[in-house]
Image (cartoon, rainbow over all chains, first blue to last red; front, side):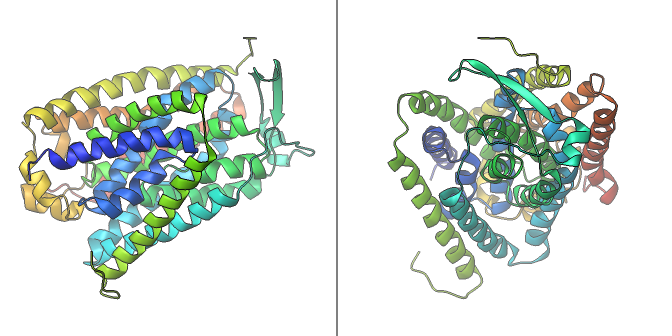
Length: 293
Length: 137
């Protein structure tokens, strides 16, 4: 097989993920890592490294515009990342340590990835979104930090002002999300958005935008762990990032025209399948199950 | 569209991130594409493909006979396109730090403290591998 076969496959694969992600509302990074682990020959170290760079690049490309519009807010992001930077670095260290320290570490990580993906599947299936949550009482931390913001909402033709609350409850959640993102190279929008929206009371547009800002910081910090261990291979990263970047632009245009719910359900079904495959692949590697593939 | 007064701390953060992201993407893509199309890498493409199913630690042992821990593996080999492409990734990984540092100057007292803490954490993330291990080169 020619050397360019797998990079080309990776490009086409990420192009498709990039197109599907905005239409389905499921993050590209969440699809990339488990599906690539299930179907491509690369070691999970390099897949996580590439996943992290992909999520970082996507977030960096969108966060500045969202920040300029007043949708992403440092006032929310900064207190959160004080905690999540530490846990995302720890996640990266632990993830690479497991595969380096144990001969069968790759299989443990693959099983854990499958379990995490299953949790993500449940979160995505069940979590609701509140367009403009009502914050009745601002907590003391948010009050002292003066967390508030405003943006012009075209659908209402007015400036919407917002406040947030429950910072103390949200911080442990962001710590856990940071660890998972660092360990598995996943973007963490699937968890950041519900915490910002449903726990802290940020409007959904502010939640999705500020989540991007949080991802830039968490994933950049964790990326140094992967860079320092040589787990970032350009031959895997470059086709992936180019594919998902082009795909996301096509997908964003298609999403404006139509976002059929069936696509979301198909993608969620694929996620569930990838979760099962990753768990089976890990169990097979450990010798607990026999599989024909 | 009606104008909304965005916190200056957010504005400088966004501007800095935008500029560094553009530069980082160009630096990552151009040498990266040249490497994939024409080869001339620190790790040649045939070796990369042969061993990319190994863990990162084993991959470097098998392809270059080194233990990787730190950044010298690409910083010492910048005349290869794959390592040059990593410099673009490094710039992307530095973009949030630089944006936070710049926004400190526009922040109020409380956020100055928070952003300085975030900056210190970020710097520790970058230099930690240099102190924890000695590079294999």
